[in-house]
Length: 111
Image (cartoon, rainbow, N blue to C red; front, side, top):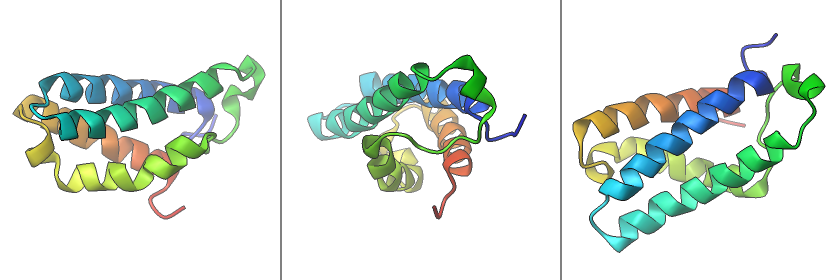
């Protein structure tokens, strides 16, 4: 099974969704909450589409399925650069940093 298979991508995306959810609740402004909510919504749509796939498809190479998630890639990069400003708690910032890097490797930084 490829390391970037759909079955490996799902827990990575779910982890990022949980990390973003934590950051959402820690955010102290509506602008930050909106920023996190947009990413959470894109991940939710992506995971919903992946959930529709057959188990036989889970060994296929993962690539983003939804337009929302593809469009969210620049925001993930922006968040990675500004993580200390956007995540108030250092544990959340560290966790998000790791999770975002995993997702960017998964989806390919340049694709």
